[in-house]
Length: 87
Image 1 (tube, rainbow, N blue to C red):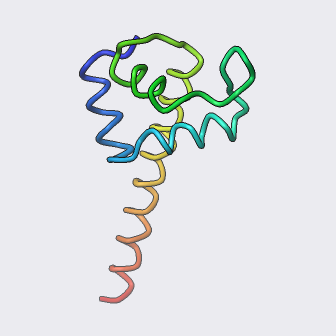
Image 2 (image 1 turned 45 degrees about the vertical axis):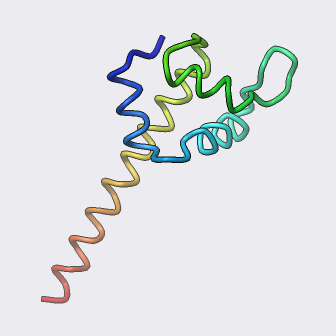
């Protein structure tokens, strides 16, 4: 289950519209509910806020956050390289 500290970190990394990003990531990785349909926004919100527990979805959320952090880090490195070339 996601604790409040992790909730804050997820929201910080993914930003304001985190549910859309999570739903897209789940869809891309073929992770669906028991009926084989995409999860609802409210279900995702409940998981992120620690109200519900779903290990598959939580694992996917952590993977998405790690991917985003890597993208931010790669962007920062490229930005630094570009700025250094101009000097």
